[in-house]
Length: 608
Image (cartoon, rainbow, N blue to C red; front, side, top):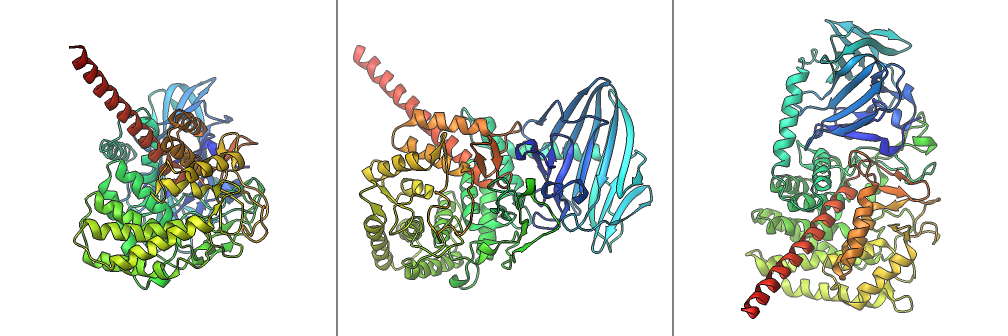
């Protein structure tokens, strides 16, 4: 059985990544890209679907683990009766081929170690032909090959590559696993020690650019590192998570592939990176976006592949049992074909933020933006599937209307602030029409709240964004009413659900329940801060920080009943909103300190 989701840690090279368990097993690894087939797929099945366990012989869970300061280098330590040992795991920044480097380091005594490598291609379905070549172990099947280099002698047993050795205090034993196209010569060797130094230096140099210096710096830095790790460096695309089919409900069917670039997720990640001072990443994302959506506005998708691919066909992997029995296991995502009007607002908002952060004006890019605004200006009044990718009938979702308003609003403000031009009168008129309709048809006076879609009294956590995007001020009674309604109906033990699952036939289109959505809970903290209840916001935020696992990572959702993380992991949505809320609370503290200093200064003058 795979471990609980919170027992995994992430390593990566900004093109792919791996999940390493608390037991020393790499249970998930896709090569050579985030969205490639998995080489280790035990996470969604069992050990026979591929994994690599490197741990003391007979030992179970590690005694402790941590990331090295300001890096994505993981240290896992075991204390045994014979002594203590450390395994250092990382993926060095890629030059040609992707590598997973594992260094066993003796801390005290002499510890017997076991390496159990189960090579599998195509999500655990294909056992490769394994042989020893030039002092290396090579596994080859079809277009793929994987090479293991280590000074330790290995041998084959039951379709496994095994090794046993002893490490003494002060000794270091390296293992380097490299993926390579099978038709090419063997990959160049990697010096594990040099790669470790270079990887640590890269991450510490990157973190040194972080502008956040507030109370929650450790949490913010770990979240920013995670977001950077989920960025596909060659193109600037940002994946929503590193995994597929980790269930939103244990044992349920709500299992999706998140290894793609959602425009919505990426734009919010962009905001988090820009607030952290990472304008270079913002520029790379903007370039990726303009390439990905190039063409007719009617062809815009809600998500793309890491290089901008549009065809993300969804299919199932029946040979995998699913995480704790949650089936089906899905690859690809049929939601890429959905109509979701909110993405136009998110794209326009992100591009506007990029300009405000210093990205240069671009006439070609603006021409594309104008086309997007004109397109949504003609279609905002049509139903869609909404940001939660409902698989039921399209509806007039209030959040989609609000974000259509955002698209028009940001276009208007861009023209007002810059030399770029556009049909201001027409855009303003459409913007005002959307606003008036939402306030009339999206508001439920009896409930005292905005609702999920027209003609219902159901709620939706996305309504928490109404004051955050500027649709209504936080002081508006309708905003406060909506916040209170969501706290009454969608909050469970302090955590916020996206919406009430199974409440309305045909809207969700799926059976079963789901966990509380961590991003939505961060949204609630932001709204509480906006409406002046900052102490409550801070209490909720710090409770969210307590949900992180021991190395500071968050999944998509939290199962309140089982006290466990659920959903894909680590989740960009959760980490980007953590960064945003931390900045908001820190800015509140700065305003208070500034106010206090002004009052102290004024009081001193009066006394004089």
